[in-house]
Image (tube, rainbow, N blue to C red):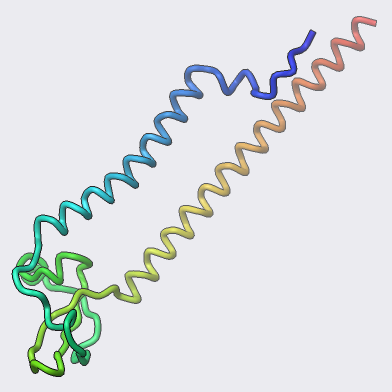
Length: 150
């Protein structure tokens, strides 16, 4: 007599459960670790004075460019994204640097995400095909045994 259980027995095997736990552990570590690192960066590197671009209007003097090695270590604006734009505050006539997100960096991240998505799609499609073949083999074996028992 067959059980009405909808969960396949293969899903309850220790190896399968261990792989699932490892996968979701790595995913949560990546997500929560990134959030914690971001909080540590902002807490550790608080600027002493408020930048002028937060309080008043500004004009962009130089568009978003990558920071040099020296600037990435010394300027707070470079530490956040690795890209900076030079701005001029209108009221105080002060020149300052503001962190920015580069279009090329955003495009690179987008294509990385697309590649990861496509790789996962291919992996799980192959997994579905393998599983379907396995189930078909089991079904045909069951039918063969039933026919032989007649």
